[in-house]
Every structure is written in structure tokens, then in C-alpha cells.
Image 1 (cartoon, rainbow, N blue to C red):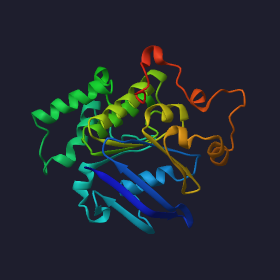
Image 2 (image 1 turned 45 degrees about the horizontal axis):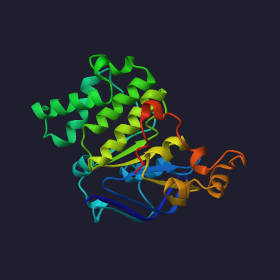
Image 3 (image 1 turned 180 degrees about the horizontal axis):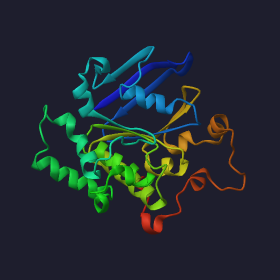
Length: 266
């Protein structure tokens, strides 16, 4: 069973400590929401897990093996990274951009085969980009482009998907669709680490939340455990209104009419 684990993770950038002794764990089938204020270290943690920044201290393991010892192509098969406000630098068609996600599974100069093409079409339908699959990606809106880049990450078939604010540019309906898609990915055996600023979405969809503050873990557990008044006050400087009802009501999504029951409901 896939497992990603970090101990005493510390990263400094520009002479400033971004992560300071942070602990991390993730297993197959789990959707972990990273929450916290701006500058807390959430994106740096994702980039560390993706192998894009170096740690100054600590241990990071993939399936019990030191991450640094895993060959780059194998790591690219296991872990996909969807950057915040990601962009595509070439005026390629949407379909060709998404097909690039299959590169870790292909040999040098090998073209995608029939099974690859079938997977690409399936993911394009799931992410609702089929209607503009022939358009150049640089002609898309920010929300359309965000869904294309998510599709490119998904066609890699990673065991772990690292997604940095994947719904930030999306309208409400597509936010819900993407969160449900990520949740389903976990139900099929994958694992997702997602950075979110919308605490309602985080509470509604994630199995577990990790609240990061000043490069350390302030709280780790269920939404009910993490989103406590004390934690919210310490991390964000906010407090729940005394007449705001229960904590569960404060973070409940009032969209069951078309969303259906919360995926966290028994």
C-alpha cells in the first residue's frame, strides 16, 4: 500500500525558515487538505513532496524508501504535481497538452497508444474539457485552463496527486465537480494532497486536514478536530460568532440539493 511520510521536514528559502520540523503522512485512499494562512508553508511542502525543492533537515520516504533514491522517471509516475495558477507555455491544443501527462509511461520518442488515447478521452470527459479539446490552450479562460492542467496531471495515473489550490479559478459548479473528482480518485485507490483556502470545501470533502502555521503543524485530524475555535483564532486571527450555531453548521455546505449528501456522511 502506498505511503508517503516525512519527519522533521525543514526548508529555508532566501535565508528564511519556511518549514520548521514539520511532520507529514499520507496513505492510499486518503484525501488530505492542507490549510493555513498565506505564507504558512503549504506550497513549499507540496514542492518538497514533488521533489522541486531541497530539504535542509529531515527524512522523506515514499513507500518506505528514501525519496531521494527513487529515480526521477519513477517518481514522476508515482507523484503528479498540479501547481498553483499553473500555465502552459506553448500554444498547443488542449488534447496535446493533456497527452503530455503520459510521458512518464512512454519510452523515448514513443507515441501514446490506443490505451493511452482511451484514458486521455476519459479524463477529458471527467474534467469537462471535451468541448474545447481542439483549441489552443493559450486561448482559454483561467478556469478552463485550470481544468486542462488538472486533466494533464490525472492522465499520469499517479499514486499521489499534489494539487495547489486547484479550484481557485473555477466557478462554483466546477469547484464542486473538481472536488468530487479528487475524492473519487481516492476512492479508487489513489491519494490526494490538496491546498485549500475555502474551509467549507476542506471540511466537506477531505478525510483529514493538516493546519499549518509558521512552518509547523498546528493541528492534524478530522475537520471537527482541526477547525476548533482556538485553532482558527491562532492560525487566522478569526473567531466564530457566538450566535453562529455549532462548528459543524458553520462549515456545512448548503448545496445538498444538487450536490447530494456529503461524501463524509456514513
